[in-house]
Image (cartoon, rainbow, N blue to C red):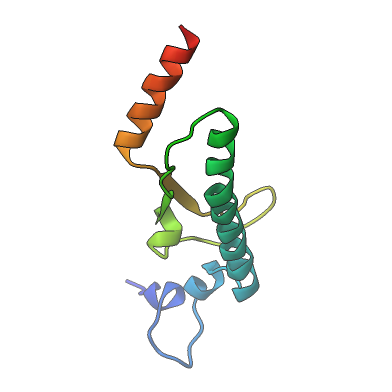
Length: 111
């Protein structure tokens, strides 16, 4: 039986393989990482601003972020054709105590 594995992946430095063609270019990777940082920075400043505008006067905890999915596992493939895209799954988290306290306060204001 013909072994085609080396066409897809090889550890030999001087041999090319299809696996290398699946990776994002350094420019694409940098663009996505920069966009992720821009969104995180926007949320860090935007969440406290919006809560203050809505009358929340307590200390607002800083959001925490956790990258998930194919970006985190280093299995993200470059798009093969349009309209396919590559993305990063980035979770934004606030403490549950803050969320439940805020939801309870909002319910009192609306009832």
